[in-house]
Length: 604
Image (tube, rainbow, N blue to C red; front, side, top):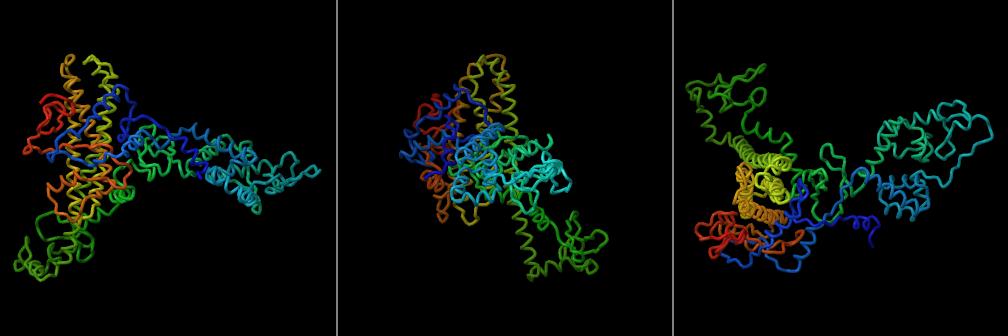
C-alpha cells in the first residue's frame, strides 16, 4: 500500500512533451517550429540501409519496450519549488495534519518539524502511540497552568514579582516574565535552527514553545530569521527535497525517489545530480565523481609530482628538484649539504674518478648491482601515474573550458546574433530555433564528453578490450561533436555576416539540424552504454579494430534504465575502403548504394 507522501509525489510528476530528452542542460524554451523540425530529422529509419560493417548498432531491440522509452523521455521526475511554493506546501501539510488529528496548527507544525515534515510518518507515529508522541514533541493535551487569585507572581528566571498579566508559560506550570521570555527566545534564535524545537526554559520541563509566542515576543529581525529557519527546514530536513547548489539560486528541487536518472535542471538553468548535488555527471556514477573531484582537489597529485621529479636531501630529507645540468647539488640553508644527484652520496667523495660533474660511475655500478632498483621503481611508477592522470585531466579540463565557452556563445546567440541573423536572412526568429537547439546540444555533449574522461581514468587496466572499445566510442563522439561545433560556430558566421539573404541558407538549416539530431542520438546511446559499464564487452576477447566494430554492432543494453527503441547507425570516420560516401550538405556517412543522403535527402 502506497504511503500518503508517495501518492502526493506521484501526483506532482510533471509530464511535458520534450523532444530533447537528454540535453536537459542550460535549456531555453523551444519554439514549436524548431521542435517539429527536430522530430522530422529524428524520425528517419535506418533499417532500410545496407549493413556493410559501417553501420553502428548500439541497441537493436524492436520490442514493445520502445514505447516505454518514449513515455519516459517525456516525463520529468522532479518539481522545481520557489520560495512561495515551499511556504504553500508547508501550510498545506500543517493544515492536513491539523484536520486529520484534530489538533491546532501550532501543534501540527511542531509534529511535522519533529518528523522531518513527513505527513505519513506523523500519521503512523501518532496513531501508534499518541501519548508517547505528545511527550516526545512537548505538546500538552491541555494547558496545566493555573493562575492563582494573587496580585503578583514571581518570575522563574529573574525572581522578580510581576502581575499575573505580565507573566506567561508554554502551557506548563512554569511562569516567566515577558522580559525573560524575550531574552530567551532572542538568544535561542541567534544560536541557530535549534530554535524551531524550543522548549520551556525550566530544565525539568519539556513543554514546547509555540510559534505564536515567538511571533509575539521576538524582535522583527529575530522573527525574520526564525521564519527563514522554518522555511529552510522544510527542504533541509526532507528526504525528497534539496536546494539547487547554484550560487545565488534560492529554488529547491523535489525529486521522485527511485524514478530514474538523478540529473535535474533547475529553473536557473543549472543542471546537477540530485543524489550528490555535484554538477550533472551522466554517464559517470556518483562514487566515481566523488573520487575524481577529491583527486583533482587534493594534494595527492602534488605528492606524485614531488616523488616523480625530486629526490630527498640525504641529510635533512627535504625534497629537492634538479634545475641545472650539473650533478653537484647543494641543499638550501640551513642544511647546505652538498651531494651527488645520481647516487645521493656526499660530493666530497666524488671527483674525476667517479665520473665528474655530469656522471657518476659509482651510481651506475650500484644500479647494475640492484641497489637502487626499489627507489627507481617507485619513482618510475609515480612518473607514469602522473603522466596518465595529466592525460585525462587535461582533456577533462579542456572540455570543461569548451563547455563554458559554448555557454557564453549560446547566451550571445540568444540575445544578439539571432536577432541580427533574422534581419540579414529575412527569417522570423521562430524559424531560427534550430541554431539555439544546436548550441544547447553542444553544451550538453561537452559535459558528457568531459565526464567520459573521468570514466576512462578509472577503467581497470587489465580490461584492455573494454578500454579500447571505450576509447573508440569516445573518439567517435569527439569527432561527431567537433563536426557539429564547427558547423554551428564557423559556418554560421558566413550567413550572419552576409550582405543579404543567402540562397543556400535552407541547406545550412538542414545540415545543422541533421548534425544536431545525429549527435544527440549518438550521445544518448553512449551515455546508456557507459552507464551499463559496457557490459557486453568480453574483456578476454582479442582486441582489434574489426572486433570493436562487431561488438558495437551487436551490443545490447542489459539492466539499464531503458532500452532504445530503434536501430541507430553511427557513421565511422574512416570509410575510404568501404566505398561509402559522405554527404556534402550534412556530412552524414551514407552506404555505398544510396543515391541520396538518408539524413537530408540531398542528391549524391
